Length: 593
Image (cartoon, rainbow, N blue to C red; front, top):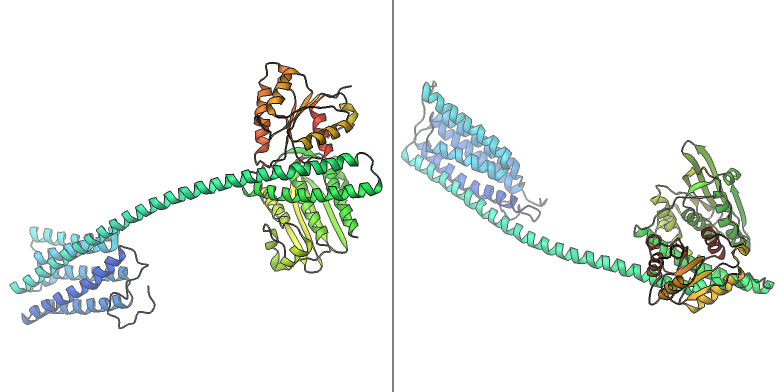
């Protein structure tokens, strides 16, 4: 409703707005033009009955004229059509009953027409419920009057008034005009409404069609993005695998001090690049809803020690004091959870603390308390770094965002670390607590529940000599990776046989016996998944059950599920740590003595 309508407004255009529905606009028009017709008719009736000296009818007509004039003015000032419609029906009902029982003391054609007008008006203006109410409010008194008149004759101590034929003609004519006008007006309104609904339906169908196409494009775009990330991951990880792998091989050759320093720098740079790639891929997994948390046994004490071991060196290189305190009792407990994702959270928090601390101390704490369902471990990472403004706390957890653009340029990084931390915790129903003060430092803390495993963890043997004489088939098409694997495996006295693609791997598995197979997933002719399926179908049970470890530099979101469906036993992502590969091999084969 417009707030600028003047009290002296008489125009209908100013009381009609775009916000009003296709049905409410005709209701307002009906009232507006209906009042004009009724006022003219009442003026004529008043003149007729006044000159006939019909006092009661004259007073009734005068009251009606003044009442409807006031309602008309109210409509043009504040078009509250529902309130006005109720007022019209109440006045009409009172006049109708008064005319039948007092003024005329009979039911004639005019009273019947008025009754029809009230029924039509109430249903069209106010809907079914109110239409029924006002219809019964007027029909019941008429029926009661007719029944009383039929059986006993109606009589009150007041002489009924009589009206001449001219008055009857005016009343009948006016009522017919109003009945026709109401029907015609709303018939046109309903037709327009149907046309609008039809147009809206056609438009909705078109929108649904366009939405369907947009969803198809979005799904296609999502698939393209996933495929692109998988391809880019493969293309980036493949040379990184060679760089990191060769660095590990050369470090295993007892290099000179200066050579070791160079190799450490090379390895650190490659690992930093790998961390950026992993951040992008992990964030994509989280946002796509494809991230699945594992539940396996691990030693939390060792996990924290391993993560902080490498980070301690970074902190000390910057001249920082690194304080690590893990409750020693945790070393005696084997917990059940996802050590990879927990390690990712802790690594990002510790890495951030070191990155944004120029001088002072880094504190890492892990304490716990027992309860009936397991243990709750409280983790905290505190620093004396640059701190943050309280107003920027929310933004640091947004992807690709840091506390300020100055921080981004000065300290580097993708700005995804804390976003990943927050998402990983939220997916587990956990909350990150942050205490910070600009220029004084920050503290990030959270609590996580774990079940305690009943079994005791058995340390894996890392004696590579136990793998001597192991017969290994490697399916790998990249010459650099083949060279890397040959050099690495030679350190463990393993001489592998090489298959250049999946088809060659299947043929070699048919004709020879192997203790284990390392299967690259992206290969020409036949990929690793199909090759594994074919090997599992071999008629020779021993050959068909040969352990297979998948190797891949791609970043497929459902990689673990696909590896399992293809019948492979485990999965190693390139670039890998030699120790990780060694452990998986030892778990899957019986060491040859």
